[in-house]
Image (cartoon, rainbow, N blue to C red):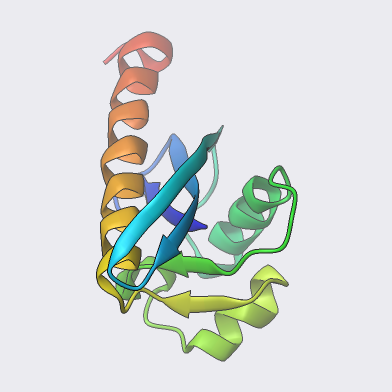
Length: 121
């Protein structure tokens, strides 16, 4: 499962896109689902982890969480995995990078919609 969070740098709302897919290192085999989690969260590492644990809790099954290196403020993979209570790695393969990129575009688009519709900007 690839994830990306939009709003970490400039405040509320915080929107996470979770992209559930089957992939080989060089290709995406099957896109299974996309989940979004939106809330008004603070921007500290600990708050981001709580936000993401709530988001990840909505997805059933066994999976490894994959994200870009900047998503967790440069924390090592072992710390992120311990905080999320899920296997975790930073995107390395072509398919992982593509899925994280898709999650990035999706979270950004949903955040823009939230701001337009709920926050009135």
